[in-house]
Length: 249
Ligand SMILES: [Cu+2]
Image (cartoon, rainbow, N blue to C red):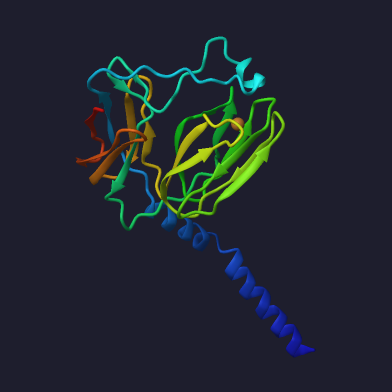
């Protein structure tokens, strides 16, 4: 009995040391954060398209009246969108220079919405392990057929408006294609990275990579039809470096 009490007491003390030691728990948390510490440097700039951009094609949605009814004017193809020389939907990211640093994934999901029988956004970035919420905002059947090379493949059906499905990716992988077999014009690209330093160019071709640690990086600009370009960029703490890329057909 006495032995048992001593053993029980020892166990309680041991458990409380392991589970309730606040400074130790905090120290562990700090260590993880310090490893992936966000910095104060930034890389920002513009992606341009030189030459005359081909006209965007009108998407023929007549095969599904639900899709067709959602567009007063025909939706336009998204594989090359250039507005007055500014190239939209270019994925710009740090390709190299972050070795040895880890960045825990955000718990906030990236949302990809199927709306008007198009994907919104058309190009996006997501971190390894970050939730991806796939939403159907259309009152029609979509299937989401995703066939990566490095990650698990999936093909799911969302027959009703308002349906949501959560997925995530285990490994970094560029240009994971999203397709819908019901509406062959639907397409999107997801880029899976192990860090948060990426962006997609807006209508004016602009992008910003914020909160970078100081360092020298290989920055890549990737476009689904025009290929990829890289540049080496060195940024110091508190500095914002301007970088531009120019694509042509
Ligand atoms: Cu669809």
